[in-house]
Image (cartoon, rainbow, N blue to C red; front, side):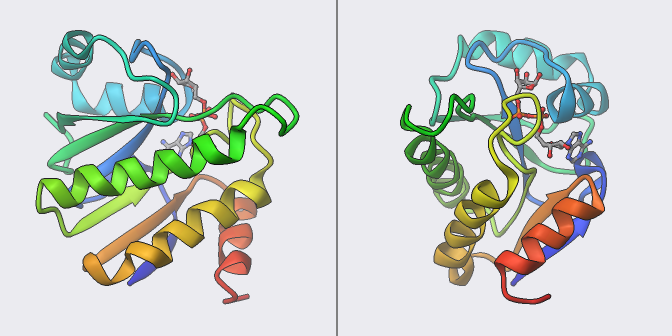
Amino acid sequence: MIKVVCEEITQLRVDAIVNAANTALRPGGGVDGAIRRAAGPELNQACERLGGCPTGEARLTPGFRLPARYVIHTAGPVWQGGAHNEAELLKSCYRESFKWALDKGLRSIAFPCISTGVYAYPREAAAKIAVTHMQAFEDRFTEIIACCHSEDDEKIYLNALGRS
Ligand code: AR6
């Protein structure tokens, strides 16, 4: 089941939440900052030990003080106009995150709107990619959550799902 919510991703009690990280896996703002604050300093230490994550790949850490058991950190592409492989890299973020979840036997996962904040990926186009991948993996999870942070994004996702 794909659910669209407008909430703090840090509050979600799921097997894994996905973090929109940077390639260094160093502390950032946006959803990354919120996740690190809620998870506690152990998350920073775990990220340090991973030594980075190339764009389009993903890495896994425990959730520490979060209600979520794991955090899957993925580095989305920075939008540079669309001719720099951005779409392929964003697709790869979703594929690699799902792959980690499946490898770990996880059944519920929540995604933020990867790359659409500081990295400025156009939100409708990013939502289409997100939804297409969520639908492709839907039958292997009990719950896939698109965790929006604004009502505008929630509408964009509902529209992409054909639910508006
Ligand atoms: N819960 C859910 N979604 C959130 C939350 C939250 N607490 N806070 C923000 N968002 P961004 P990016 C939404 O900028 O574009 C960081 O500094 C936000 O509204 O967090 O992939 C990293 O370290 C937007 O829709 O991620 C990187 O350097 C979405 O999360 C860089 O930003 C993603 O926005 C990554 O940029």
